[in-house]
Length: 268
Image 1 (cartoon, rainbow, N blue to C red):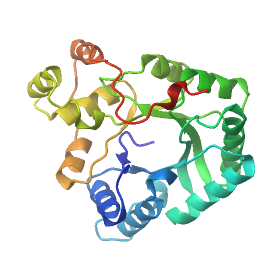
Image 2: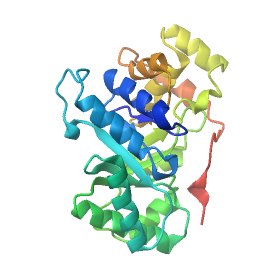
Image 3: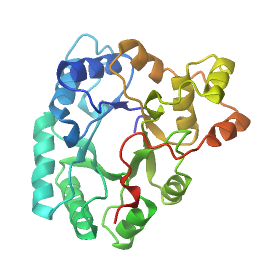
Image 4: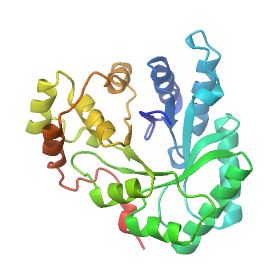
């Protein structure tokens, strides 16, 4: 799985297509969409267009690009299978690399039936990898206790220095579940925080690059979202930054449980 994925939440139409193309040209190899974003088709079109264009100088193929989508609502088994099939068709990419249950909403029965549908869609080749999103520890424990044939490979949650979610990330890492960090830049709400500004200056990088690097050094997979070409390039260019252990601790200490969007991790 690529280390950094382009997030396309709250983008639409040509804006989505252009952002995905710029990201692929800048070296990104992963795009994170969802049924609720209503842009699976635009993402797929942009990826397919890139692969068949002169900009694809490395002769990349479909299997070199990692595409994620997510189930809008947990539901009964048959409805979820139909929904997954719809996402594959909309994306026009033949299959989806990573498919997530977008949230734990809907209750235990719907969660477990939805997961069974994901397992069977993997068996049928519609999906390569299955995972979850916004799952709290109790939801992960519930799913693992059900002894699924296929365990969730990923839990995608909001994680950044201002919301470290240590309980969830520790549980995931103990159970070999990859943590994908959405809103890794805290939706730009803390870019001018004195600690972030000071450290970014020290490391000669932008505040955004610093926060993405923090995510990577914790072993997370960050999903920075932007529709600006220069910002997309900037967010992917963090290889030259290495944050010291002391500064990582200072950034960990910024935790204030800042939620920038929804927060379903404690739902029943």
